[in-house]
Length: 86
Image (cartoon, rainbow, N blue to C red; front, side, top):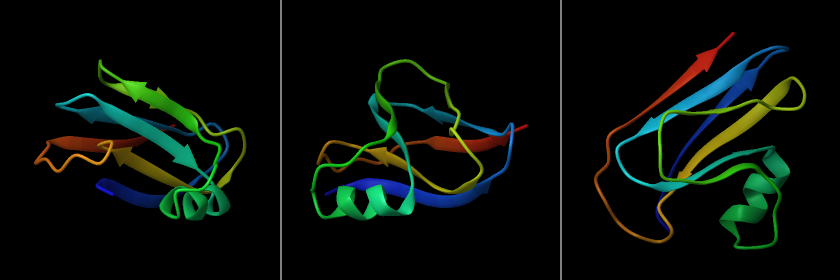
């Protein structure tokens, strides 16, 4: 499974802006669902497949969030940035 991942605390009113030079799945998950994603179990997330960037994801509440760029099993060298807004 090929993916990029970072974990950040997002406070009230904050969002995540992800920019990437290739289409991919961009997901925002809590810790429980990130663990399920890694084990290839059913999981829930905010985001999805993106062809156009940048994309902005806003969590429903403050807390620790996992920001994942998933390449659908492909190995690739990509350029990306993750910016916290707010």
